[in-house]
Image 1: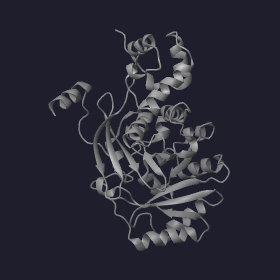
Image 2 (image 1 turned 90 degrees about the vertical axis):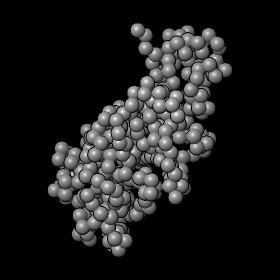
Image 3 (image 1 turned 180 degrees about the horizontal axis):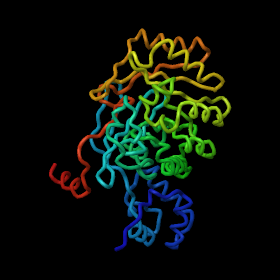
Image 4 (image 1 turned 120 degrees about the horizontal axis):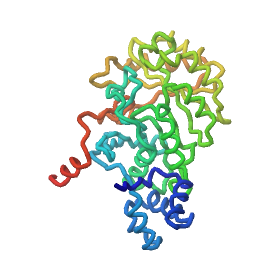
Length: 358
């Protein structure tokens, strides 16, 4: 039985090759990308500057796989959390954060996460599966059209569900798809990839032409504590991670952001702040302090405002750039560490039945 391929999994060059087999010209790939990414069209028949013969062949050969929008929740601060359903019924969450100062899309790279950081709800799901490049890019495509932002500048942070470097190939392919000039044209300077430090892939990232901005989730200043908070540290230790960051090629006038979730009476002392400053000495670094976003199931508490300010001030006193992240979307469980999808995934047939019965 012939199965149609998802055209949205193809980069422009690969699409040109596929179109050649349909006796189409290379420039048709650019036209198709523009229809899908610029205009939000998901039906080949509507691509009216293509011949009817080509549109029919495309319809017979490909699908335009697109995450389906489900529930949307809007926070009092304007943050919007989207539930999206993938083709196999899996569900993921994606977040739009306005005025940050640019508009930002927080995108997922996996359904669930294998890293099991003890302060993050997503880790409690375990890893259900990796997302494909088309599913990662599809979140951006859907949000850009839903929010009317296709022709406006926005940033992308790969800080949603999942560890991007644990799904390296599909994540980087998605960035190339999103960066295509015939599509959304989102360059690497507008993308930030957050990782807990999957070291072979972090070194590999340093060689990429589409290298995004780098954010490293640190959260501890000793091997013992990081082993407890971020279990992958038992495989890729703190010392090795810092060494990898020291050799990472940072572009001129840029820095590595080190994210540090602050937990009351766990990693928020002055001594912790001083160790962090020593650890990052000599690296062009910015520290992003993230006071814990509390939620049922997370066994920690948010530090007091005094402790947060004391921690940040101690880092600044050691000549490091530091910011305290303002939590966005906490009232709708859209803040850092709060993304989780509960329940049993539904098949496409079940989803269709639900829609018919609404």
